Amino acid sequence: MDQAGSLRRMARGINGKIKAGASYGKLRGLAVASGKGGVGKTNTVANLAYALKREGKRALVFDADMGLGNIHILLGVAPRYNLDNVLSGEKTLDEIILHGPGGIEILPASSGAREFSELTGEEKLALKTELEALGENYDFILFDIGAGISSNVMYFCSAASEIAVITTAEPTAFADAYALIKVLSKNYDTHNFQLIVNNVKTSYEGENVKSRLEKVADRFGLDVRLDFLGHIPTDDSVSRAVRSQRLFIEAYPNSKAAEAIRRIASRLIISREPVESIGWEKALSI
Ligand SMILES: Nc1ncnc2c1ncn2[C@@H]1O[C@H](COP(=O)(O)OP(=O)(O)OP(=O)(O)O)[C@@H](O)[C@H]1O
Ligand SMILES: [Mg+2]
Image 1 (cartoon, protein in one colour):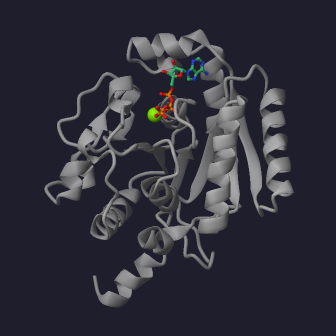
Image 2 (tube, protein in one colour):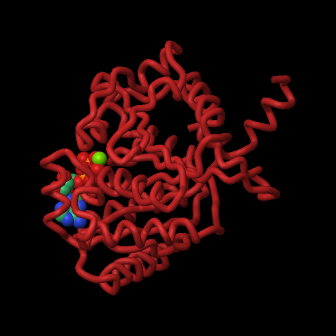
């Protein structure tokens, strides 16, 4: 590709959206992030990919939990290659795709050795090019983002065009969700977030968490908009499915959690703008 072409591609998010907002491609990159660990990101991403597939959407799961990725364990599949092989230039992303249960497709994370190391500028650029090439085959890329607010977390949130923050109603998870939103809005100029509330009984309780987050954001002068994508109830089917390394949506399709994920998938499909990406330019400068 000529230099002008490369620069034009640089100015686009992976959904093909030009940062000025002039046009939108079909691919949507959704980062599922939380701040706090253990609140249900990996389960949500994996089951959501399955639900989207059942709705006729092609979804690729990107295990972006650097060094601690475990989506393959959750699904009982053993990756032969992982992101390390892509970062070292040996493989392309499409060559490391793993096929999981229910036909979901997964990009396995880097090995444990990378847990504390940040991606280099070169690696970020290489990943961007790889993702753009892959993107043409999918409707969604779902990024399972690691816990915390490290620079890798920020990079992968930037690589997506949309961010879904997942939290529970517990004060610790709530505080970390708020911290994540705050950093993304103050330091990365990101103002639109989807919200998923896990481990609550009703949608009303989920909406309540959203209102509380909005109030705190307002009180501290953050310019953010939160859209409620849905709640997921506490459900034994989730932990039972995890123990048998299966998707709960496949193993227990009539469970409350499966119902909730299907609802979230439908909402996600119909939700459109405001789609706002930090964009590759910023991602590459992190
Ligand atoms: N709705 C739910 N009902 C019951 N148990 C749940 C639910 N959601 C999550 N869990 C439990 O919480 C555990 C952690 O979930 P998961 O691995 O998806 O979290 P995570 O946010 O990806 O964690 P990490 O930050 O470590 O990557 C699951 O193994 C499961 O046992
Ligand atoms: Mg996880």
